[in-house]
Length: 101
Image (cartoon, rainbow, N blue to C red; front, side, top):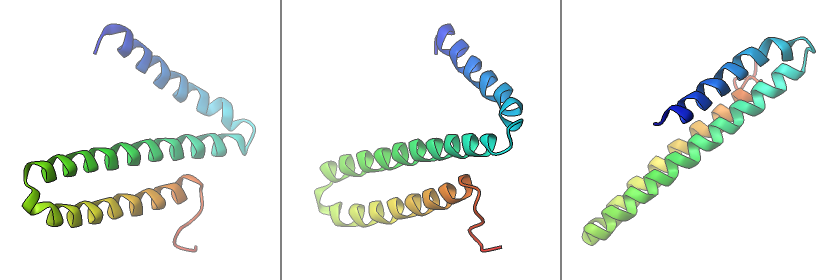
């Protein structure tokens, strides 16, 4: 990673850390900002994970067509687990208690 990209990442991180106390002054603004930011990160992470999973599965099926059914079943199970965690993380980001308390 070049110096400019590192500087941009550190600057963005510092900006987000310094913005949190300023947004907390209003009361509800910080919660909605952090919830939306967390939901965005969860969505990006899940999309990247499922994309990488599907890419590897399709490449494996192309290399070994006789194992395509087994690979497809494993891919669907893994994608379901990723989606389940994604939904849980989105509920947590919105500040709701998923356990009903």
